[in-house]
Image (cartoon, rainbow over all chains, first blue to last red; front, side, top):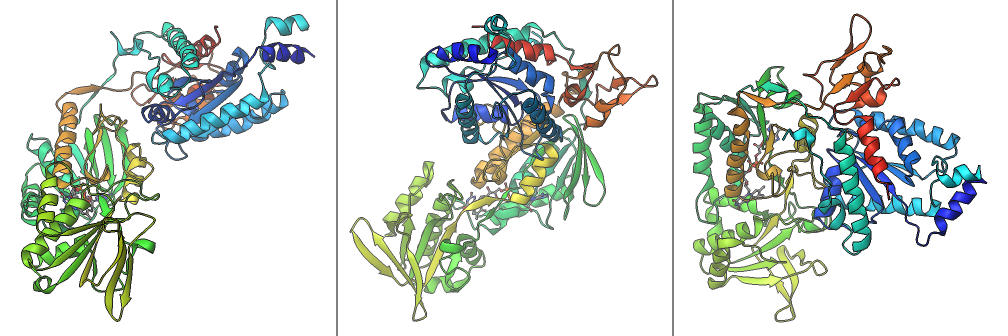
Length: 157
Length: 470
Ligand SMILES: Cc1cc2nc3c(=O)[nH]c(=O)nc-3n(C[C@H](O)[C@H](O)[C@H](O)COP(=O)(O)OP(=O)(O)OC[C@H]3O[C@@H](n4cnc5c(N)ncnc54)[C@H](O)[C@@H]3O)c2cc1C
Ligand code: FES
């Protein structure tokens, strides 16, 4: 019930737009996002990019806290396998992400809120595509409420 | 100001340019980005510049004209250079080209360059060599070659070049089947060898853009139009009576090369346009070449039975070389396999990885003179590092809060640079000189005992929180 109330209150605002936090590694995906800009590839304005040195820097802690802060979706993107500037960071990220997915599922976070991708510095267009895909997916899920503590949820409880 | 107190709200590349049709939403996003940057920078502190001494020598990979030019640029400043070349000869593609658009022959120039390189006291050339491993970073790389020897150097220039595309599929046009179908380089060989048979040719056809500007290779190979037009003019010099047809899609004899195009037209060379939907058809009819195409100017189908067909084929990257070097030196490659500079306009010969530079055909197809200019630019950029006694190394490194460390050792295992170890008390210690600041140990630590200077959880979370202020 708690979720229900806050969901309706959040969606009832006309034209709800999700906010998605994207953790991008400095060497590939962040540069890919810059290239998307230079090449003027358009994508939905819902993401807020946070630059990190490597996708392997993104701990479960950080990712969960983004959801807790109110992110409707989270994207972690790094270099392609074998291309990580720090050799193996993206492999750790991939494994961490696989495990974390199980946990997220267990605590009731809908699949499709948290995404992982590889985007290289030359893939401006792919970056725009990934953002479109992630935004579309998160839009179909509606606002994320499960981890967010808001006045609504507290009152309803 | 200490550079580690800087944070950028990337409003141009990651906001205004990518949401050009949604100004209101873009503005709301820009406000968020500014809030996020402020929140993040608030938690940052000035960091010391860790300096590493510079090993004053350079490694140049690839002994084409680009690599030789770069090697000489270093050596003439008295820096020792190791030049490695995978084949047994210096010169690369340049050896197979007859002359440039100004009429200057390549071979004498290349032989002279190679002689200067091999006799220079500061240059050591390693033939038949490949790179096996690269360790270290700017100021102090250590590279191991296929023969097991290693070389310490402060900078590296990558000049592994490119290669001609071999016509195949619908772009084959009987190349390798009919003996009168050649690529431009095969024709150049005849020029170099002063092949007398060229004089007896009555009719020749050149086909432009063979394998370029198609979905698999969307780029223009840049040198082939000029190369083909110049070769046609050369044929006219050998036999002014020869009929020559240029089948082209667009002619790119850029800059002053335009004069060559005018000269060609003045000499009666005929340009016929084709497009991808109407590729010229090449067949053999009773032992002779037969080319059928449509001339859009006279709007008529034409048939030519030339004595020779020359294909101006695309230039492509040496995929294997570029791929393996990008792994060794952590440099980016583009979708086609060409090496990718750090910034097209601001850092055109640098890689994003400090201390590594690029020049020549491995970057994109370009003429010899452009390759030479770029080789000099790369050597000049690299010399900025070699001229210093020490350069700043990674300042953003990991730090351990020993009060929180439980000595589990996960950090030592996830570190790809052997920068973390457990000390005599079983607690984690970071070797700052080896730490590259990736944060793998930070993310791996279950006790939150390791953090990355200025990129701690607090800063990242503060930035995230700031996105939800409104
Ligand atoms: C088909 C074709 C036609 C051209 N026509 C013209 C023209 O008409 N006019 C003009 O001005 N320019 C022309 N060019 C371009 C010109 O040849 C180049 O700009 C110039 O030769 C510089 O090339 P480079 O040294 O960068 O590369 P390359 O000539 O390719 O040399 C690269 C060298 O690196 C070596 N190498 C590769 N990988 C490794 C590795 N992993 N380890 C060690 N060594 C390695 C190779 O063996 C080679 O010797 C043409 C090029 C091609 C391919
Ligand atoms: S640096 Fe991009 S994933 Fe590690």
